[in-house]
Image 1: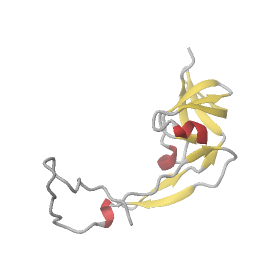
Image 2 (image 1 turned 90 degrees about the vertical axis):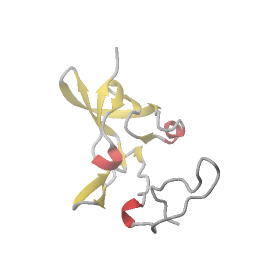
Image 3 (image 1 turned 120 degrees about the vertical axis):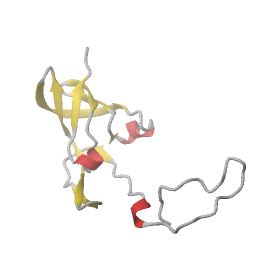
Length: 126
């Protein structure tokens, strides 16, 4: 069954809300595209509302790091932290806000690789 962005079926009192409309395609939720650390794989393109497209990055081993106003490309070695889900660290999944170990030091991801198709980050080394 499809998952959708909908309000709860139950009221705070425990009673049921009555549905006033069926599910619409605009309310459906897309599948989570997990970007993992690994050899570069072809990106996946998704159609979006308003004649726009989203590019989903599947796997990558490089990140563009901004350090003191300069941008350098670095090799990703490991995922250190991920506030979205602690399990993502073990699986090597990269999301926005994840802290990665790279050849340039620790980097925090600032882009959304599952929707932007690029991987950008800021150096967090002291």
